Image (cartoon, rainbow, N blue to C red; front, side, top):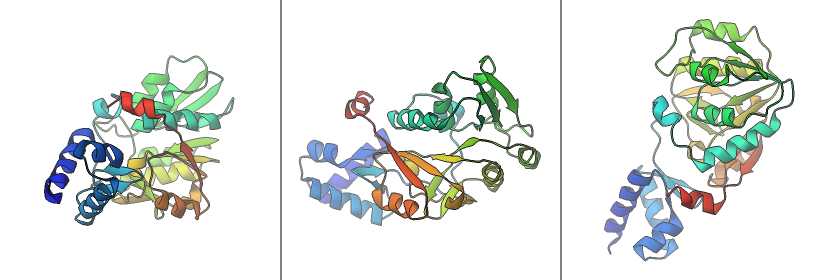
Length: 262
């Protein structure tokens, strides 16, 4: 098989699966891992994919907005589950938390500890998930409601300044040595306001958002205490983030868990 044919098949697999692993491509295409790595490098040089530790993911559009709720809150990935389980270890009894309405936030909700907490959110979906929990005092920041059910306008941003959070969980379109970024300047301003009133800030970013710079800069790494990601994340980007004083934690995902979803 010619290299051009292999690369077409790699792109087809990436479009279908959402990610590819070099070892699996080597087995499927019956070529060496070194050949696959060269293919991936060539495709990355041409802007057709983004390499990760052990494979590749699709190129992220810088102004790509959030997915529909049915996608964000639908079938969970084992990467997100592993990150969420690690993130909730930082929650202490009687903490006041800010939890928004992203896909990673939805996973964190599933693993919240059962002791007394106060939660502030700008998300109708998060509020609906938490309103029946007797151990949680729930507050909702108001503003114009978007199709996603989140509120991030100037009114919501202004209200955030009235609070102080023990802990907030930051996510977005991407994170790199340049900081946290997202698709919208409005959301970026809201995220920065949350960070300004948080005593501790935990970043929760799966590997496909590591090294990604989205359209609007939301916050610098100096306001982030910990980054939790998974073991598919590119190590060079993680090292650059660590060098700016952020503690990086790798949430291990069992091989059998990944394979069961393929």
